[in-house]
Length: 567
Ligand SMILES: Cc1cc2nc3c(=O)[nH]c(=O)nc-3n(C[C@H](O)[C@H](O)[C@H](O)COP(=O)(O)OP(=O)(O)OC[C@H]3O[C@@H](n4cnc5c(N)ncnc54)[C@H](O)[C@@H]3O)c2cc1C
Image 1 (cartoon, rainbow, N blue to C red):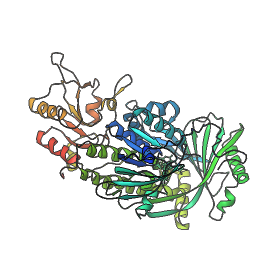
Image 2 (cartoon, protein in one colour; image 1 turned 180 degrees about the horizontal axis):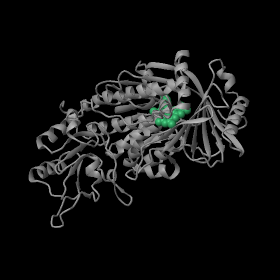
Image 3 (cartoon, rainbow, N blue to C red; image 1 turned 45 degrees about the horizontal axis):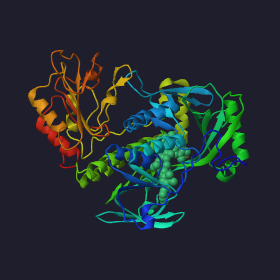
Image 4 (cartoon, rainbow, N blue to C red; image 1 turned 90 degrees about the vertical axis):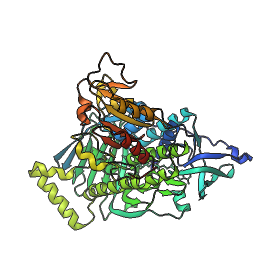
């Protein structure tokens, strides 16, 4: 909602683009079959189109709107998401505008009880978290998609229903100039919480709704307070409530506060009520500058998911597949991971580098990630909005204890999002052998970054397909190892071998993609010695790793990672 007197898209800081309707060839009788149709040009749909384009696959995106998301939704994007965006060539646009952060503070009444410090070091290219309004997120992704020449964006095109069989999908589309049917080999449903595709297939989300409602309000205000997450339990301005504060670009502040159980939500979101409560909060924060209301809405937390994310030729991603609570900032961050997971797998199938059963792994991997989110976000949500009187008593007891004992402040840790490890995935080989390593990302985990030099990091060097990180102290590669790596690099699918060396032998010609690990930091972080190999998927997750490369096993692991055989 916007303040009275302002139009729905009249923002204090963001100029909404207008995307026109362009009459598609299908409406003039041209028979055209698309390889991939994506329903929803939200952040997840467009990210998937970018991942498909990265692997040369064109797609058509249908969206019922003529602009980006209005109001304000996701603001916190994790380092892991930035690493995804880096691979899509759009991360710089994000870091130039977003506010990076590492720290947070939690208060009980008027005392600080917990200092959040997310893991960060000079080894990382990106900060642990960035704040950026979802409007910018969508705009940057859409503008990037338009540069690829492989993404067709069809605005003002509402999907009304779909029918699918073993050969493809037919999509019924309503436009300002009438209806048409779009045909595609595969369909990605990225049409959000009220997915028309889900409805059309008669599918339902299952899970829980949480007690408690939040007002989410954005205000514009100048303040020197650093970019940190601030959480308040029973603060002086709202003695029985919970409050969250985040700084965003353009002097916008996100204020989330919990409504009391006996409050009428309709009444609580009246503009005069919002102004009174936000004013009291801002005064409590000690801010004295003028402020202006940008936008507000009402929020309720859910943990809901589909039972299966794959239905024949239809894959569900993002909010169309799952709804997760905002506490811990997992919705869009998980959506980005869904996007690359579905994107690379579909590209592999459509490029003929894998068979259709590879797509079956979307459910165990991404629904597995959703269940993990439910476990963590459920804890955070119950702490933020206790579901019962008993729960509230326990929560308040923990908070009271934290006034006297530092360790008890840990109960208020917000458990921010972390990437999911696919150790149980049918695509992951040898997770049981992880104990042979002293360090490094385990089988199924995403790669960790390492600084190699000035503005130069390990992950910058990954190729667009599978990667092999091969470790060799001198850069020399024994013949039997060189043979299999060469075979994979010249195989039918994109594979890049990166040779990581500590002291390259100046007399040796070395491998074309040799990275010098001058201080030994990469060897150490990966628990590697000469001959160690990490086999890495296009989404940077480890498919398998060996302390000593075993040629036959790497061929088998690659087959497993592309769904051709079970581990
Ligand atoms: C208040 C709030 C705060 C949040 N904060 C965070 C955060 O800090 N971090 C985080 O990770 N997540 C956060 N989230 C969650 C995040 O906003 C969502 O997870 C994210 O928007 C999901 O993206 P999506 O592309 O899957 O769906 P959506 O963003 O909902 O996009 C769906 C798209 O599909 C289109 N569409 C819908 N129906 C049709 C149809 N029939 N035909 C054609 N097009 C259609 C819509 O117009 C829209 O463009 C927050 C959410 C809320 C509500």
